[in-house]
Length: 305
Length: 267
Image 1 (cartoon, rainbow over the protein chains, first blue to last red):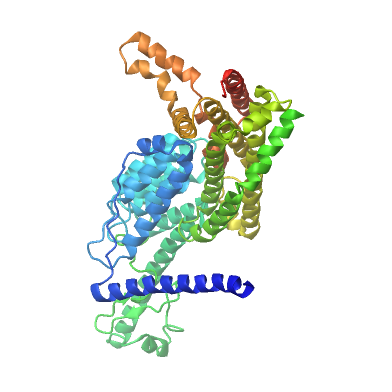
Image 2 (image 1 turned 30 degrees about the horizontal axis):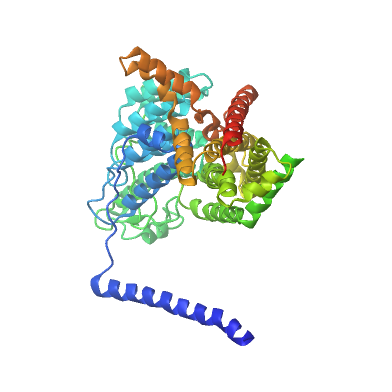
């Protein structure tokens, strides 16, 4: 009797394991024969943050978190998608709902300001929506000068409107508790808007005021890109010097090292080698460099007017 | 003493009914979330774990309060065990109050254990996070202010339990459950009732709705999760007034429940 009682759970467990293995096998088999079902497009059934806030009763902060995770996953999925038709249509509604449910969700505003504004295909290419989100954040949190600074930043970096960027930096400086350097940032932007040096100052300011690692690393990446642009300018000058001296375009970095014009093969701030085109002499980032694509329209430094 | 004996028997029964299994689920949920969400939330794991911990405490507590609360009196009547109880020197009001205190004790243990589990997890995050990450936090990980949120969650659960017990003195479990959940939902919406005069044209109706605003339980003020998680100050006066409101409301419900049960014909 004892043996039978002890044996039953084992038999039961084995039968259960066999059944589980069977349905997993059937699923794998079906997917192989008929293909895996395609994941459905993201759908946003409820677009009103206020309505969702009502429906979530006392669980509103948790629902805001869920929408935040959806926004991050949606953006990540779209950005990593290999499809040329990748879309970011739901990014703004997701962030809008998140911030309606939790108006103090700081990172959602700042995340939005970067990735809504970033030009397509890296981001949504909607600086207007980035500004709308940041403006909403500032209305809900009037002490947060960072949102006003970020609006200035969107005008500066993504819309190349240096006058309005300077105005917003001044507005940020007016917020009680804002750091003193915002005023000088505004002055520099209005005077030298668009040059690489003021861009560098802006990203440095953003890195220093970042309140999370993600924003800090995003600013560090941009600074590294600006350093790479400087290095490309210097390397282009070296290539031009070689050409003036020998009448030929160098065929490789080694030719410049042998000519003692470079001490070693140059690498970008991320450690990837720069590429020298032997046909034209153009210097670019390596295709595998994590700094790709470099920002366009960032002028070299020019003297203050 | 009689009241305490009834309360302890409710507490023991809840242990027998494996009510505390939800604590295990809570711990697994939190630890699992801590491992998973760090990868998915762009640095918001601390906020989300706090939100999740407080929401889960409220959610599990709500289900215990409603599902156990509606059966407290009804079960005794249905099983006819109420006769043997009342044959002892136990008055009907004492029975009702004892049942309430017993479930309040169960909920207290539940909320306390959940608070300890959440604090342990948050202390681990505080200890294991580098300085650069901690600098970006709006409030420390193991923030003592979270206790304010736990306190109001517990008081809200006491109020919901009183509602469930009140209904269970004269209605069956399904009706009591529906009514208690209904009151819980209305309790989060009733601020709208106060301002219905902007929508309705009838003055008496507007007054009636305004009266309902004051009469129905207002549960929204018990929800301070967002404030606490964002490191906002919740004044002690606010806590005291909200707890005072709940204490009076609970007293009204328990008095009414005792009165109804005392006059109920159990034959």
